[in-house]
Image (cartoon, rainbow, N blue to C red; front, top):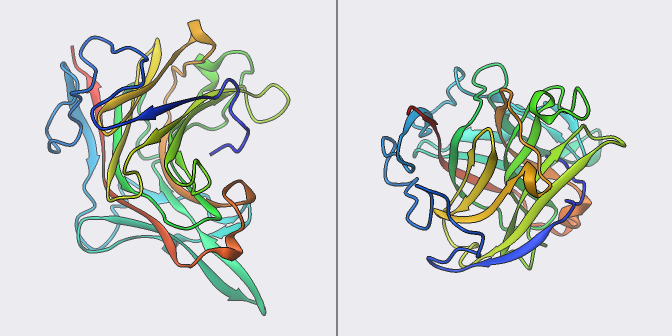
Length: 277
């Protein structure tokens, strides 16, 4: 998850059953039903091709692996930061630990790199967000190396932040959708949107993106919140990308010293549909 401020970041407000005035494409809109069941198709013509309901006691190693182990920003990613709770949910936590007489922060996540890397589809996760400052949660897509070749995001890929959240976003009432492309150095470009969501701090919410060869369409709780294409200054990846669920510690989210830890995100399920028409 890139911390660059998103270029052309714009805002919106999402209320119950209300979009944000971006328009609705054919077959996609306020009635989008990504949470009706693992077999349900939220978009006509799309078929469920991959999912994890996080059942059992251990993470399915054929679908996920620990994400980016080792030092990462202001924490250390550890494999046991992500675990199943035995009740059908994935829990990703940030915690304090003592190492060599010093306080450090341990966090982490999971990703599908080398295991499952789709190109296009509708991807959605049902998530309950963290409560404390100092760390941010994300559900995102990326590839490696992202941005090679520079100037060709179709081939070089696009970091697609389906959802990013920390408690400093409008006092914990908003999430961001962001795109990053052309690498993370001087050529870096981005576009995104911050959208307020009523009841965001209460329970679970679904976050999804419809990724096609022409555009990205983002959704929160089945309602369209952001639509972007090359025509309006965005970029579209047309290469395989892996899924990531993560927590990261850094100043962007505030001072972690003030947080009550452990704290984290809880993921009920992740599902991917592809167009079979």
